[in-house]
Length: 411
Image (cartoon, rainbow, N blue to C red):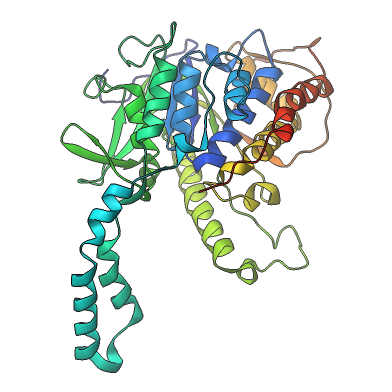
């Protein structure tokens, strides 16, 4: 593949799925959203797309979808109900790294000595932040390891009919990570990184700094791809995509617009302020990225799916909350289903230009935001598919099993 952007012609191009980062809850939200998309398309599924791009938590889902795992199968892995495959466990995501932690603790006496010395020298000018920074030297580069996640993904992708090799995978898959030593974006799946196993790149892309140790690939260390932008839609365009469906699970609340009685996020403490700040940062990056691409490539249709500005349900869960996966998956399914159908005419025109049909149904306005950019073009009419009620009933059957299982405590 050439490093430059491929020229767009008048022919129907490829269809791409871009999954942004958002931790565990983001990945689960995306799985529910993909289930919703599948049930709204006529004669096509998300597994039939041509290009898949995944970042951070989205890298895991993208790798599975590109390997032929259907959204219902991914939902079964999430709720630990798949009849034939070992289902995901909390230990696959949170694998403690005690040896490295104990090794770093050997530096504690020296760090305490230096911190005490600085306090004695500076007296009243000594700042708490300086002391904490000195003591932070003893902390490990990550409290958890992604080794268990890599093993689990490898186990899934080495099953018959799957591939853990970019070069033998039938679909185009791109996994985004960040090179810790250069601060630059690293794209796995291109010719210069295609020899790395997919499972290892998924682990690298999801290595949230401080929470997880960096992942070594060759002579370099890699961390969360979201540091270089939550979603890399430009990679899909470079690969020839003319239609991009992007799911971004990270969006901030707008409590002022919602006219909430107590709309001050600061009143809810550190967690709420931090959560809102991270969501604002990631959301702004995605929006800016999409805006620039739409201006530069007007022939490329981009459908951006993300939580609505008043989606308190998504805001309530922190990105790494394992036990909330059932609620988040169900919420992602419901909100995206109704959100996609809240403006069906617009969506039908966009999809119709790429030979994709959308079913008919009527639902009220939804707590999910669907942002599509389109120009004049052909349309496509679809009807005669299962109703929304049937779809929701199917979801409840799949997810309901969790209610009869003992809760799994988060580490």
